[in-house]
Length: 293
Image (cartoon, rainbow, N blue to C red):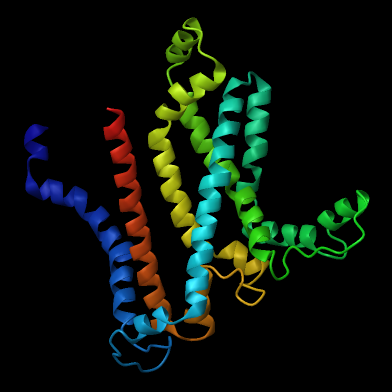
């Protein structure tokens, strides 16, 4: 067996399918995207090389900066609102016993298995200013006016609520798995020492969840940057590009405005931002671990 796995031909035959799939499905599209970002390709017909014109246009494009700001705002919302709540719920679920634990786990995860189209139209009805559920609830409590959450000034907050609600179950399930993998002996030792629940959470649970938190935070930032389907169906970037995000703006430029080259320039910046965010997060978590040691 050792002789078999030391054979370079055997090693290459095992690695080659994975390398081929990586090249065809990931590397080649990225390289093509970079190439097209330096052209004025519209998606059909002839095109020619225009250098960095797409990138200079991007620098002066106010809608692009608005989309980037909205994406970063969504990432902050995920990190500061969705994830703390997900950790709290995961810890509480871990303390439940029997069928209740499984039932509540399924309830929180249900939004993640519902179609994006269904989610978007469900919330459109909830937010409807004439007959929506939110309007009816406010009227029940005596509110006389009309509220339109998807209108100007409030649309970005309404979209944030939908996206936090929709992705909550997935983040919670990852944290829940992390909590389940913590050795119960540590909690028993803390209880013997007289540690309170709050102290146990900050001294044992949270430190043990750090690798999970790093993964979830990285995924949250990438998810915020590539957010497209729900926003496209819910607001289509409106009103007045108020809810435009990087992925939805990329789609509009590449496939609706027929600026395929410009859309690829946006995608290149998108990849660079994702890589930069990943590097920064790794540095931050490594520095904190070094300080604690």
